[in-house]
Length: 174
Ligand code: KMT
Ligand code: NI
Image (cartoon, rainbow, N blue to C red):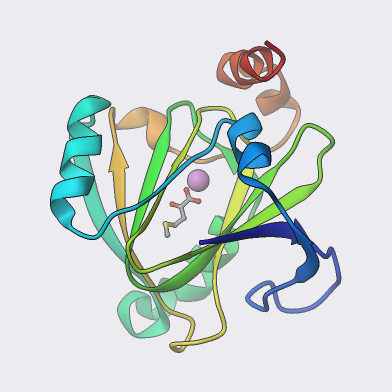
């Protein structure tokens, strides 16, 4: 895992976009993000059980796996969105980037590699992309508590008023 401020330069989102300014563990903690390196699936199971996760699936974000849907999927993942529930992602293969917004609407980029697990709180604005290596490839386990809440809600007027967004903002200021 490596966290840093996004450079905001135009170009392929799959490039590192490293501004050279690292984001500290305190920054991630402040945003409500939990990070853990899991060397085995037993670690993931334990964390999932402790947080009452009941569902999971696996996704391979790569042209060979998604076929014609690849471009559409990758474009959708990179649209700024939130979820009404926590989202856990565990990297099984390849690598990927999660960009998360801080309270000043700046992007913090989190690079995840095999064995990295991240818990993102409900209501945080974020987006995802693969990296440039491994033929644009990320294999991830997605864990979720309840089915409907796992839908991505793209940022807009509605999400600004969303109750989970409001609750997230409240918890960040206490
Ligand atoms: C998300 O919520 O942004 C995603 O699930 C991205 C794909 S998981 C590697
Ligand atoms: Ni998401």
